[in-house]
Image (cartoon, rainbow, N blue to C red; front, side, top):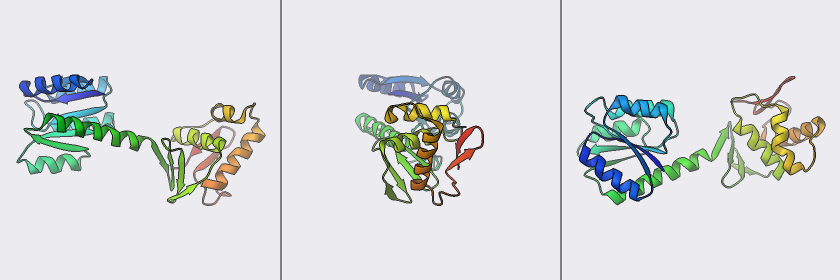
Amino acid sequence: MKVLLVEDDAAIVRTLTDLLEAERMTVRSCAGQTEACALLDAETFDIALLDVTLAEGNGFAVCAAARASAPDMPIIFLTASDDEYSTVAGLDMGAADYVSKPFRPRELVSRMRAAVRRSDAKESQITVQDVTLSSTSATVLKAGQEVFLSALEYRLLLCFFQHKGKLITREILRDAVWDSAGEYVSDNALNVYVKRLREKIETDPTHPSIIITVRGLGYKIGE
């Protein structure tokens, strides 16, 4: 786990760095808003620990920058025990949790791991309209009801959803289903697979709103 620690108290930085490195985490620390924003632009982190009050800038501005550069990264605010405003404001900005100072080190580590687990679970689910695909359980739900797909149909849907927001060419789809099909996938076969998938996930398969044909180019996923 790679941790961004934004804290201007040198004693807390030393204590936390020793603790987290003992837990096999990598820690990058800085004391102010400007350096924190630069690190967020230059590197990728699994989680951020942000002190609200900094000598230069503040944790809320860093949180906003983190949300812009890494929307899914969990953030934990380090707040004074009697600072209710900072706690509420941090949660309203999308923070995963907050820990009051002085904090119990082991509790902090536990909360960090829980926040990362929740984030990983969220990332394993992809939702388009009323269809949700969970890659961890290999299940597909439509309007809350499970849809039963063949292995090939599941691989095809996963490929579609993973390319949400992009043009999905037939070559991309062939690569996705080749192993399941066991042989070269012709255009006609691919048309059949897409038709069967639409029949299971579209509300009206004759007027699809999820898997949309881009004539002459491939497909796109509807918002």
